[in-house]
Image (cartoon, rainbow, N blue to C red; front, top):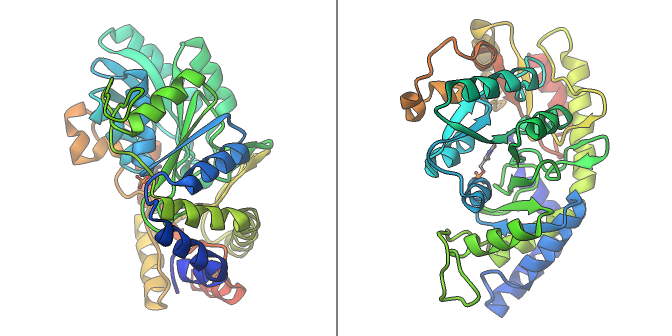
Length: 369
Ligand SMILES: *Cc1c(COP(=O)(O)O)cnc(C)c1O
């Protein structure tokens, strides 16, 4: 059994995908070819944004808006410590300071009731200038944007949605990648919409920001290819990856439905055995991960061992919250600073999740737990 079975998906799309890949190989337009533009149009339309700028990874998709905004030393960026390292990494790469805010115990997303407190504290301390919030749509569930955007407005903070796991999710019909000034997603193969290598995209409705992102994607280029007006990166998306993503977009909504059906089956079979995921009223998850909580660390260890013996792959997202990562040790956080994230990192684990998981597999996994 695979944790995320990309083979089954490939079997389904290969008849249509292979000739299209072959066409790109024959055209030799490998970088930012016409299919890249087609993909950007399609993605922007899908999430309901004016612009999409595709790029080389989810990490670059987070980095590019920070560069465009001129975020740097002395700036405070509020985010969650319960996420993938890239979220705080990009903040540090531009020289700004991540200010962590603990998560909600049920959604695992940033706790908006603690966000305001954290902003007030930074204002009081007077050392850093509050600039932006990076909420993460963890495991495919959008963060609480109605609250977050209200707080952002009050303190005049920018919002960068980390939807690396969130593409396909929604709140009351508004799609993930449409919240805040700008959104970033990842097309890493294991994400809900994945390509066959690294890839990502940035979304915005802002004309000026769009121009900046396009420039930053290619070494801060100006009007001409060899005129460089600002610091940028090599952040382009390959044409081959766009072709893969276009093929997967054709079946994406159906796959979302399949993921939701599987999550529902899991939750029914696992209720009372472990704590199953919570999706608030009006929210729609794209189930990047199906993550449950054991009672404690020993209970988790016992379950994971049993699953391992049956050949069922599992993963722990995330065993170490970002404030306790060695790379962030100079920020001065300590164990005990974010009790919810710390407790959940000891209890959480993720089960196989992909659209092609079969009923007998789900039943085997559930009965093994
Ligand atoms: C995967 C991920 C990223 C980074 O995406 P890459 O495409 O791997 O660079 C950023 N944030 C979160 C929450 C992620 O899960």
